[in-house]
Image 1 (cartoon, rainbow, N blue to C red):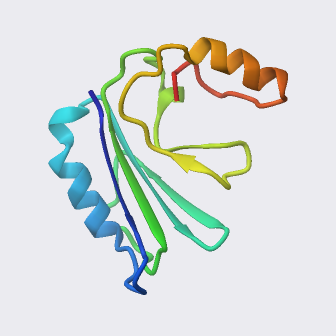
Image 2: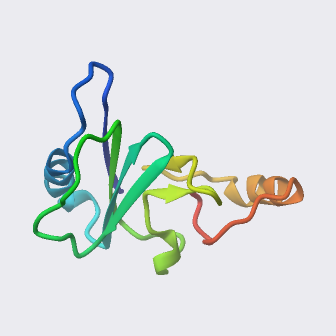
Length: 121
């Protein structure tokens, strides 16, 4: 089981990194193997991996995503989340298991998509 969290700025109240970090800390029991966060503003992203800095710096983000990982399928660091597509324009955090992920992967590879892990994300 993993833990995911996120916040979106719908009401012109910027997402604060400290809020997402606090959510990740509360989910530590669900994913002891890894943790990560990403913050989005416009077309820019700021990814933070463990160990987190003591001061998370910038603020004013439109989206923040957090993930606590329990490694089951791909045990390597390549399964780290949040995970993005090739150009960083799409981001995902996933909790669960996609049972037919290998079939879906083949279909997506045939369409030219490139994968950087062997996980189901």
